[in-house]
Length: 307
Ligand code: NAP
Image (cartoon, rainbow, N blue to C red; front, side, top):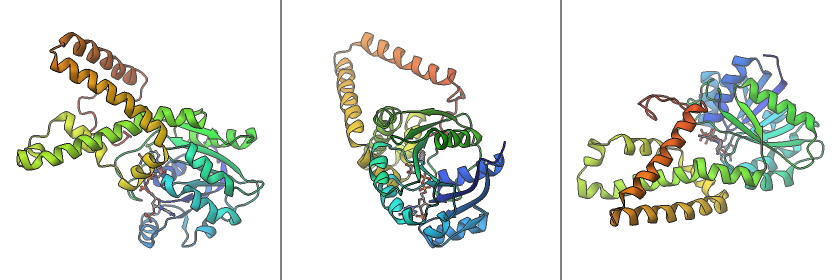
């Protein structure tokens, strides 16, 4: 794989940034990689484990001269980070992000974009419930999707280059409109996370009644929920606050379906339940056939590459 950018700056050094770094090294995609994280502790860990060629204590030093700047911070701070670095960006550079929400990030970032700098928003649909600089691995993006949402009026060259970069990191790339992106991920990721958080919260409330049995006898379904509900609280708080409309729309539909299933149970309508579960089973088959998960019986417990 050929080098795509001379200098790449990673802002935020958690799961996604560290996975990008190891995948960049694997593919030889960047001449030099610089990095910055908010806390001295994270920067120290990064230096210790060789995450980035140079880790800077000053965010502006990290982005100076970079051809690609990747914002790998929680979505709630993307705008203020962009504001901080705007004056240090090189003319002709591309700024991108990896945030899980696109409309809000684009609205907050683009007002600070200097003339001559491109912004192409991005979102790799890959992750784990782990966070921090030690949690990344080079294979995270292999055969997963990365969605690009170019700002209006962006010329084709920076988009094509970023596409090649993500392909070099192992991902399949598609372009999408911001609002459509936010609705799709509300269904596939954001609402399921909220439901998992709720289910684990309910079990925790019940703990007093069941005297620890929820943990002791935790079975497959609940364990899968706890894995998702262990995801980073800051990241997910920001996701719900910045993808408010789409998440509420999907949760509204979810509540209606839940009421319908509740009614079927109350009325003993087995036919309704059976037909519903047959339909949902087919979706799982579709995901496996699309190569987005394996049919292994330990789903959700063995591997790491499951957002
Ligand atoms: P993470 O492991 O928690 O890392 C976040 C990093 O951002 C940390 O290095 C943190 O620094 C830094 N940071 C936080 N606030 C900052 C600020 N104001 N200025 C500079 N740095 C700051 O998070 P992640 O999972 O990599 O997520 C990063 C982004 O990727 C988020 O926008 C998220 O929505 C998106 N994403 C996540 C997943 C996933 O499954 N995790 C999947 C796809 C996309 P400190 O360590 O010093 O606090």
